[in-house]
Length: 165
Image 1 (tube, one colour):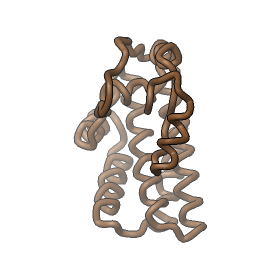
Image 2: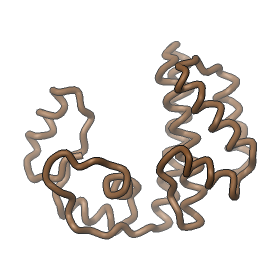
Image 3: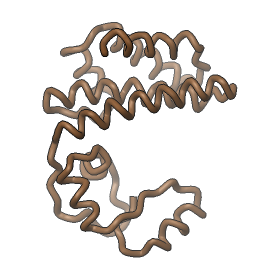
Image 4: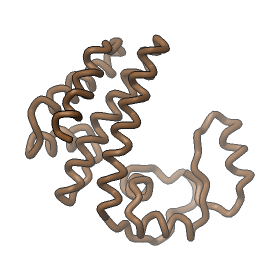
């Protein structure tokens, strides 16, 4: 993420292989006030490599939790698409991110967004069905070991989402 007025920076970062978000300080302030998860992650789960983040306050809102839930479903879809393309790395990464986003969204509704995998698992075990916590742990381990994910594992998360909806 780059907070700047210079849109050319987006092209420069893209040419270096980064998938970047470029916005002005005012735009960043607006997303923080709305409760966009991007602001939360920029403030609490990022490393500043140049300059400093603006002095803004993140406002946890219903939008925050809804966006995390929406994101989990989008990542689940990307995982299924990865399987269809025989892209094992994309599939496991997106399934991991999807389950993690779902847990974060559920925890968000209780006023907390966990960042690390340890915090995600703790929050999950405090209030969610053990099935989703076990699935997250299994997929996290598969991702570390670079094991391929099966269609049935992805489908297990999809079925879980359908049940809790």
